[in-house]
Length: 243
Image (tube, rainbow, N blue to C red; front, side, top):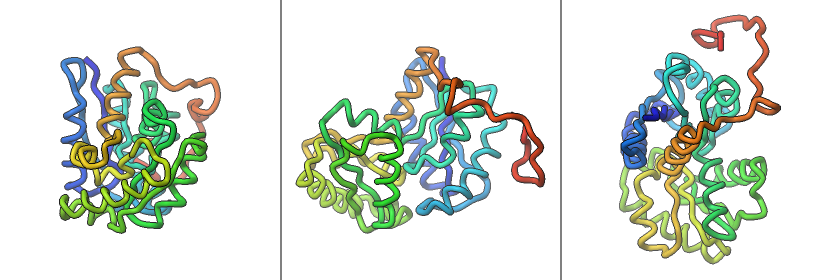
């Protein structure tokens, strides 16, 4: 039995609840999940500033789970704190964005990411380039709804996603990715309208992390994800600096 820790990096209890539902769909008789969020930090993450604030909260939150889980999922499409957590965990740590991009390339030639506001477009384009998938990106399409507005009215959100999805298909997308954890749970409704594969990043990442754990695979320490060297950390940055 593998236990996967699913982290909502923001402090929205509603979003954590939605993430929990998607994570539960990805469980099996061999997998269980723990879904949690930081006690402090931004209510939603829509900027690099908020990503960095959230990372501190994540590091403080994961300490108690470091030796008791078999995998970790960061359930925010910006993958905040992904590389620091990969460095300090000896189990697979997967961001919902990096997992969804890898999955999308298995399902079609080009994919599009559906996001909240226009601000997210260059952020997603930069992230896709960083992960090495720019040649497969058809477009990043917006719903014109903020992250918190996505959860207020699911019918309105699905309508906005459908319009964004049609634009994505015209841009050449063969696969659509829900580019925000606030959209989790809407995959089936959107797929029924779009007639192309739609990826729920939370459910996808939980399944992928469970598979890595089952295969006894984790991130390499040979280079990028080496454990940080021990050194003095001044001030009360997080509760415990010993990893």
